[in-house]
Each structure stands twice: as C-alpha cells, then as structure tokens.
Image (cartoon, rainbow, N blue to C red; front, side, top):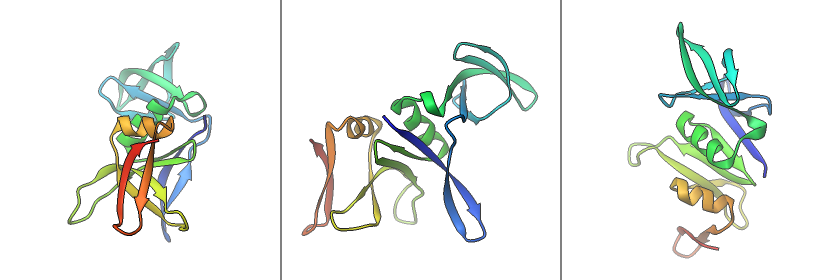
Length: 149
C-alpha cells in the first residue's frame, strides 16, 4: 500500500503541493495537534516527548514510511494536506460563498484529465482505499455517488 502526502507551498506563482519525504516524522500530541519533524526529547516506542512553545508535550510519533491509511487520513484531514493512498486522492476543499469547507475524495471522469471532488466521510475514505466502494459519475444527469463496488 502506497501512502503519499503533500502540503501546500505558497510561491509567487500560486499554491503548489510539495510531497513529504519518507523520513518525515509526524507527532500527534494529547490535544490533537500534529507536529511535523519536531525535536524529540525522549522516545519510548511510539510514545515521544517533544518541546512545544517551551513546554514538554507527550504524543505518539509515526513516520511517513510506516503510516497506516487511517493515520494518514487523520493527519491530512486535521492539517489540510493532500493524501494519495493507492492512487486515490483525498484532500480538503476550502469552500466558497455557497459551500462550506469539507473533506473530499478526488476522481477523474472517464475521458477527462481534471480532478473533481466529492464530499466523503472517514468510513467512505477507508472503503474507497480497500476498494469495497467506488465513485460513480453519470454524464447525463451530472450526478456523482459513492456506491458499493
């Protein structure tokens, strides 16, 4: 299972997605904050102690190479990253005046090249990764649904 994660990088030409290295360490503390490559003071298995604003904080650490799909989705959703797991894209839709921001799965239409987004729950995300569900698009009605595979 291949897990890739991208973070938005702001440049003079717009926003681009830069991929995290396989050696990137993500630490989730007890309050749910995610720290990327923090300075680790102590380590005992996957439990670590890091320094955050002058205080010592406990959390669990995972590297990009050993991350499970559920962990990758949780980190990507919390920090507004793009996650690509088994060629299935998940990312945060920022919203506009008519729609609220929401967590989405990406798909490409049959003869298209542009990425379209559909709102999903975390259970649907895991089912799409395991291929027990799939995204279906109907051209005539311009309708899109997630159905059982």
